[in-house]
Image (cartoon, rainbow, N blue to C red; front, side):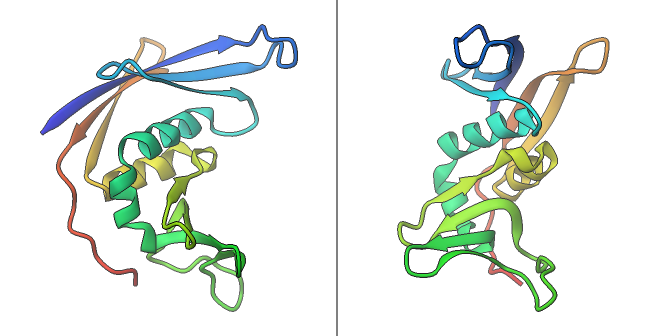
Amino acid sequence: MQTQTLTLHWSTSRGRDTYGYNIRRITDITTGKHYRTCGGGYDMTGSVFGEWLNDVYADRLQAIGHRAAAYYSKAGGYKTHTDANGYRLRGYIYGMTRNDDTGRVTLDGACGMSCMEDIAQEIGLTLKRVTDRKGNTIAFIVTDNGAPVVQEAA
């Protein structure tokens, strides 16, 4: 089992067009790579964690891409797996979109960190939060349990 540490940092933008915006950054201690997002009004932690998952585990995400809740193709456009009433069908993973033209899978972490944690679990990762005295998450310890056996969507 491989373990990775991701540290979380908050800061404020001093850029000309984004002055005063929140910045959320995750640093992968193993590789030294940074993933960041700017703004607010959405789950910024989920967003940067989703970027990290997209970058590091793209192959595993592609393996479960058939379970993506949304899919896209140039011919068909953007669609979601829903029933006749518009409700999301069970067995499909919310926050994940599959491009049918290229087979690439992308994550939208802005939908929530809990969705990203579910996706991480689906691809064989275990997350442990590290918090400060006030209960704020300051890091994640990610344990790779190996790639899971891929099952078809329900």
